[in-house]
Structure formats: C-alpha cells, structure tokens
Image (cartoon, rainbow, N blue to C red; front, side, top):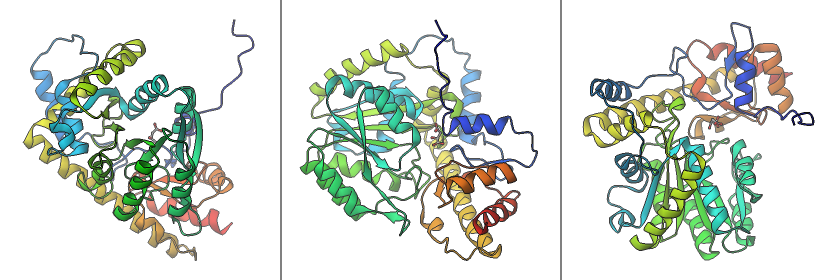
Length: 398
Ligand code: LMR
C-alpha cells in the first residue's frame, strides 16, 4: 500500500521547530514559529488563564460533548471581541460564530464551506502570506492566486499594485486579508488604505475572508479590529477567522472561532446549519477545556480586564525588542537603515534577510528563522538579543 509514497517536504514553519528541537546546541534560539515568549524565554501562563483554569477544576465538571458549534458563551464573546459589542450586525442576529480548532481550524471550516458554496471561485492571498494559507485553500480545492502586497523597496505596502490586482478578479472571488499584524511582513494598511481596499472589495463584489490571529498585538484589542468592523459596517458579507492561541497564550489548546456575517437572521440560521455539517463531518464537535477558559475570560469583567493588561504587557515587550534590535544592529556595524522594523506590527519582522543568510544564521549561529526572512520578534529577550543582533550583523556583513 505505502511502497510508492513519497516523502513530503517539512512544513516551512512547524517543520523548522522540529529541526530546532533536535538541535543539541545549548545557545540555540527559535525565531521561526509565531509564539510569544516572556523575557525568561518561556511561553507565559497568563494570570487570567490560570484563574479561569483553577475555577474550572474546582467546579469538578464532567466531560460531556459540546454542541457541534461549540460553547455559546465563547462564540458570543469571540464575535463581540472582533465586531464590537454595539455592532448592528450582532444586534440584528445576522452573524454566525462557531468554535474552531485554533485559527487554522477556522480557516479550514470556512474554506470547506466556501468550496461547497462557490466551487469555481479563485482565492487571492497576499504576496507574501502566511505559508499555510496557500496550502490550506488549495487542499480545499481552490485555485489560489497572489495579490501584490509587500514592496521590498519601501518595506511598506504596495497599495496600487494590490488594488489593481483586486480590480482584475472576477466577482465572487475570495480575498484573504490579514485584518491586523500582517503575517509575515508586519506591514498593515493605514485606516485610509483600508477604506480604499474595502471600496474595491465591495465594488467588485469580492468575498472578504478576514484572518485575525493577532488581535491585541498591534495597537490594542479595539484598534486592531478596526478593519474587520469597517467591512462589516459597509454591509459586506464576510468570513472572519479568529485565533486565541497567541492572545491567550493557549497555543496547544487549539482555540479559535469562525464568524460569518450574513444579510439577515433567517439567512444566518441557514448558514449555521450548513457550517455545522462541515464540522460534524470533520471532527464532530470541538474540545472543551481551552474554549471554556476563553469563554470565562471574555465574559467575566475582572478576567477580561486582567487579560487586556497582560496583552498590553506582551505588546509593549515586543515593541521594546524591536527598538533594541534596531539599535543593536547599528551598534554591531550594520549600516543599513532598519527603522522599518519599528513600524511593523505584531509578532513578526520581515527582516530583509535572504534565504542564504537565514541558512547561515541557523548553521553557524543556531538561530532559526523562516527562509522568507521572517523573524519572530516576540522570541527575543534581554538575554538573547545581544547574541542574535551580533549574529544577524555578521551574516549581513558577509
Ligand atoms: C506562525 O505563523 O508561525 C504561526 O501562525 C504558527 C503556525 O501555525 O504557523
């Protein structure tokens, strides 16, 4: 049966972590995967998560099945977080939210559902995009194309290129947009640019699929949701994939949500019935623990306030690391201007390192980065930043 099976390539992100884990050099640093580490190099257990966990364990609850769509309180919280509590779309009950297996699971449920609804649609992703976007939508059966996004000359957004490309797409093409903290570049459109993007999406009758995996890591929970809210306020139907992996530091719990914004409560009920079929035939219903923790934190004012504060601390530490990296590269004799790193949002920096420089960093310095040059700034800390800056400077200087 398996004789002719070929060896698949390693996953560009998680495969790198496998390689990192088997590296025996004690000074190794993983700047590959998008994970936030604290200043001691540990994945933090957030105080709000710990409190909710203890409460749950003390309640001594049995482990029954969840409904196919997951925990109602979580879904309501996730929807309100991204659309805002006062959202007209929520009040008129035209949104559907289902719990998902992380943000990736939300994308997958959405992709499978859209494929049934629009079998001939193209999916447009940004150039570059998160490595898994293309693979995930292709696996769902779509043709995936790329819209221009990043301009390496300016280290900024190629807005004209992006808009021209979007205008050329057939109506009902699906456009995957990073709602904030673009992965991998860290380059986000300004509010004015988002207005232009939303206008083209609306005029050309495109379907926005908004991926929001880093809400709270850019400018704050509310500010980071502005693009999604703009699209919804314009009356667009859209899909929104939320991840709580990073924002609650609950990576292994695989907790996220998919929200679909429809035209009416009656339409929403029909859409939910179909999305539930996608879930039922994939994994039946979601796991409980992570969802219950996030549901509690989103719906208990004391825990929510604690969470917002902790998220703020993570955001500030990443900004501090960006600034130290820029300064230390200069101190190590790099004469290229790295100020663009300060303007990038979220966990990542598209550093401009070439694939060959990334290889050299890994082979000679035990520092792991994605071959595109993406580095996870959230993995830098006061103990490793000098080594990392020195190593990056040495590979840049050749
Ligand atoms: C990343 O981009 O590193 C994260 O989203 C983790 C993943 O699943 O790829």
